[in-house]
Length: 237
Image 1 (cartoon, rainbow, N blue to C red):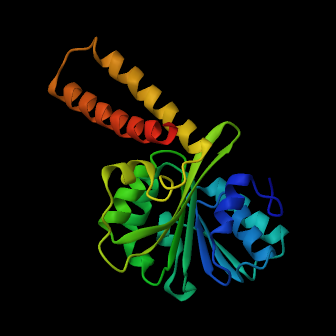
Image 2 (cartoon, rainbow, N blue to C red):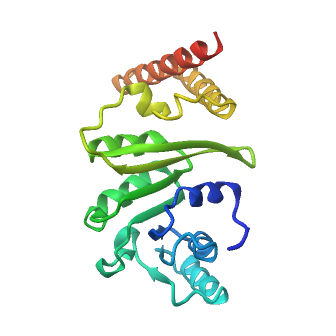
């Protein structure tokens, strides 16, 4: 992978960046995504934010190598602190982190979200936490994707500010309101995997001391298994 040829996962993230946006890529690593967006004429300006010195130096080197120092600002900063008011950022990409960490970055950087029109988020795990955050903070999901790369399954969530309160069911929060409408084979594979794993965890809990915490956790997993199996059985019936 390089700035000219992204992975399938990052190519799909790039697909959701609006043409002409001013984008901030948080946790940019080698800055491949912002470089790709500028090189392909999707955006004219971008910010690459990185909190770790090694990836920050790699990103800065990549931007210089591509001759894009005048168009991409590489900043060493925590989360959305990489965004400055004068950037006038309209889209933010955060890819390759866990859902809870992405939520933490968004929560801690709420002030920098003023003026942002779109969030393109690609969690490696726990997408539900992003949907929970979106509903609580009045962002709606306009698009969702599920894809498989190197035997790993990823989701991409595209968020925009909601015009009215966001009300999703527990099933939609868990599995995705858009993904539920178009249940692809990869979607079904993901949730069969998840359900099987939860069943193993529940089975292992049977042999442990039934504390209040264990009972509560087991009930939570059983409810999620039921939600998933209802969806998969309906799709396969």
